Length: 72
Image 1 (tube, rainbow, N blue to C red):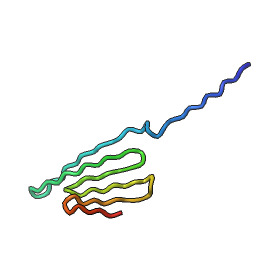
Image 2: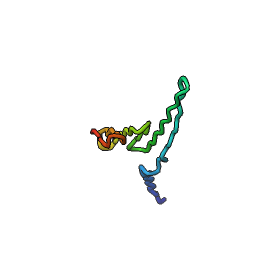
Image 3: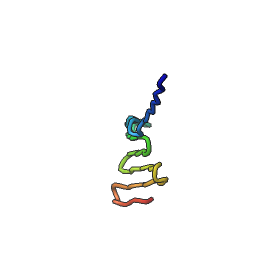
Image 4: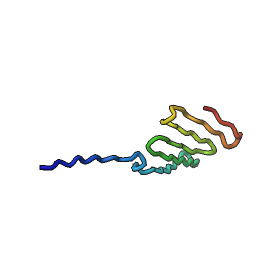
């Protein structure tokens, strides 16, 4: 009787990227936020500000497009 050993490897890239766009309306003002997520990182875009969470590097980046500045 022969035994066959089967090893299944599932790469991290198998996880699909997800994009969610939300619109919030209050008193006639509207704000749109888009978030992008994958297995190791998340990005949130809202009114010229960007927040990037790099889970694989254990850090968060905050980017202000209007003033062209960032913080880690």
